Amino acid sequence: DMTVDLPFLKVGAKYKLLGRSSAPRYQYDDDSWNGNEIRKKFVLSENSALYSRLCGVADSACTYPSTVTLTEDIVCYDKECEVETIRVVQVAPDVFYEYVRRPCVHLAFFDDAKEVFAGSAARMCAHPSSLVATKTCCPGGASGSSEIDCIYHGELVSYSKNEAHCTAGNICPTGTGNIVRRSKCQGHVNYNEGSPRYNHFHWTSGSCTIKIKVLLDGMIALIHEPETATNVVRYVQNSVGNMNWFHVAWPRDEYVGDELFPTIDNECGEGTCTLQRDDTCLCDVVVENSEGFTAAPSDATEILSKLKIGAFPPQYFGVCGNDPNTAKYDCGTDLGNDVFVYHLAGQGYTQDSIFKLPDETDEFLHFGAAYQSGANEGLVYLKNLVSDITIGDYSTSTYFSPPARKPLTMRNPVLFHDLVKPEIRDSHYEIDAVIHHLTSHPNAPPFISNILIQHFGISNPSPGFIERVATAYKEGKYELEGGGTTFGDGKFSSLDATVAAILLDQEALAVKLDADPAYGGIKEPIIKVLQFMRAMEYTPTNHDRNMYPKLS
Image (cartoon, rainbow, N blue to C red; front, side, top):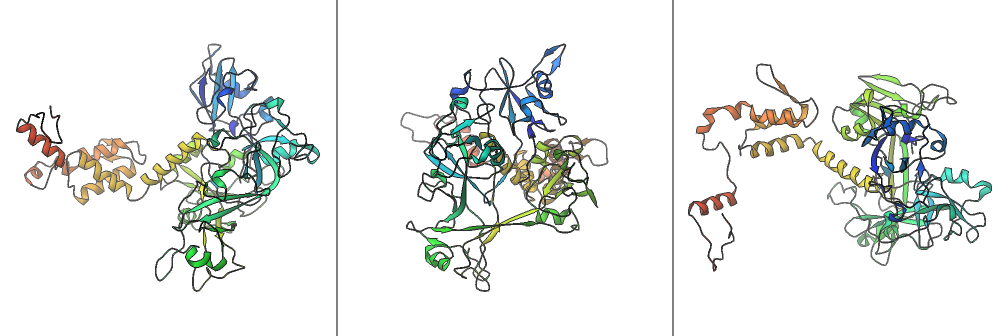
């Protein structure tokens, strides 16, 4: 994973005013923490640059803006330098701000997963670089004295941060189920099977494996197998209680066209996967990460066709340069046509290389805007990583091997939610992604244009009319014939440009078309019936069984 130090202090970081409440709106905290003075808050020092931005001083007094977006990187101060991220910060006794992290996706399958546990009731897999578990040490081993430490309640850290905190190898081992001492951070030991958003997980040194369970209809579920495989969280356990089923694009048979996947009918690929009692197939998963490009690509189109995983702008990692001791990334290489590539300092093409290119297709515009400001506007950054998964054990069976069939290899699915710590913030991002994916599809402009034209009273617009409106929708501007007035802001899906193209088009203004019986708006059937009944002065009676009793 490509991690950024102190992302909450980087340009583009967003903070929203909570007022007197310390309960976040886009993340989950225990309700008992709000207003509880015993719970440790992250209080900003008045000497902090972040405090200055959130205070919003005017006339020697804080104004506390409702939303603050950092326009430049700022330097950490005091406790800000000790944490990996923040959730809610206190600026004044009754003033709190919530840090709203940028949209970010996670790969569903990954290597080197670690076992995390919540109380004594549940355990599952977590990515070691994800900020999803607490700082927890076990000097006495799995059954001995153990303790949670935190700078503020709700603090989450990566595995490496926890490892550095637990000196002398005192990381909790696999199988740890109880936290004995938690006086510093009371309230962190919690597991709620029905509401996983309230869970508090803790790191262990135990390993963890992620597998796939395949249903008869081809849907799959993620299965977590911790090193201590007892009390696995229900929604990732190998049981009927697993609830995270979803569709994937299985390879298809070249001759018949049927999807190829392991089922009870083919004995789970003749042993490629393991047949289970509930007639499902449990499959091993091999993650294969590789460089998308090992040399300069020909153009932006080739990059977009191959790379699908976004990246932070290189400047987020600090100053650029070729010395790895002073810089993480070099200052970039111009590949032509506004395409640049940035490599790790002193290295060539690797999986961590970053491509910068214009966002001409608008495929990434919405999420790019969340990262962008100033010089980054209208650009997209892609990581030089192709992550695929191969499903099943091919050392025991050749059922899914050429020439008879295809290997079960596909793109590694991405998730907005981290299953260890789901947040309402990521639900918003995921819904936005679906909507943007639909509206940026090539078929969307003509489809939306046709519907809008119909709602403006022309039920059967000509193909030319639809094309002209769709062009205005895509280009974000519409210019009157003969020059002169231009409508729209030049951005994709501009409503000003689209409406102007509908109302001012030659087909909409042509008086002669009024004589065409096929021109104009066709009334909907229900409208026709209602208007006819009103024209007949229909009056309902007590015994009337008409389905439209109220027409007044």
